[in-house]
Structures are given as C-alpha cells and as structure tokens.
Figure 1 (cartoon, rainbow, N blue to C red):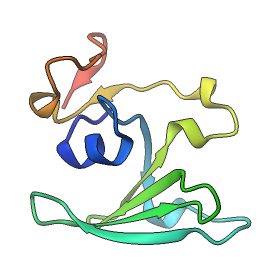
Figure 2 (cartoon, rainbow, N blue to C red; figure 1 turned 90 degrees about the vertical axis):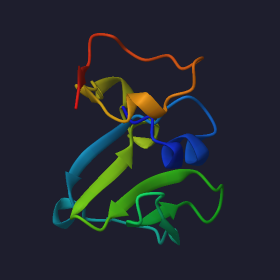
Figure 3 (tube, one colour; figure 1 turned 30 degrees about the horizontal axis):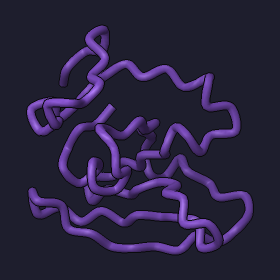
Length: 104
C-alpha cells in the first residue's frame, strides 16, 4: 500500500494498492496500453500504463527496475494480500491505513 503524493493523485483516493514485481517479469499477453511519463516529486521517472479505451490505470514502471501492478485490475483481486505500507507520512489525515501492514 502506497500513500505517496503521486499515488494519491493517480488514484484520486487515500492510497494505492499495488503488486510489486521486477520489471522484466511483466509479460503483456494482449492489448496495447497507453503510457504517460511522470517525474515524481523525488525526481524519479515513472512510466504509467493505462487502458486507452476506459482510462483505468494498469501499472507503473519505475526507474529502479520495479513495476507496480494496480491490485484492482487483477483478474482475481481478492487474491491480492498487501504486506507493506510506504510513504505513510504523506497520507492525508482521513486515509484508511491498515495498521497490520509492516511499514517500510
């Protein structure tokens, strides 16, 4: 779960549930997403991939070799079980922050 200002802006809500993998492990089977390159407030480049038909955010590729897949876009989103939370200090005071997750 990420609460950084970039994820808050991207989701329009209080946090982002994402499944992190090494970028080379992502293999697109079909479709062609649209992309948008964004510079984070820390100065890192993130390439956002989204559906060109409906606009849903799909995944983001970071400049440090990780890809974050939006948990809500998984075929079985109930199989997603977050284990960590990051950038909690950036969360708005109304955010729903899972207390049981390890803070990194």
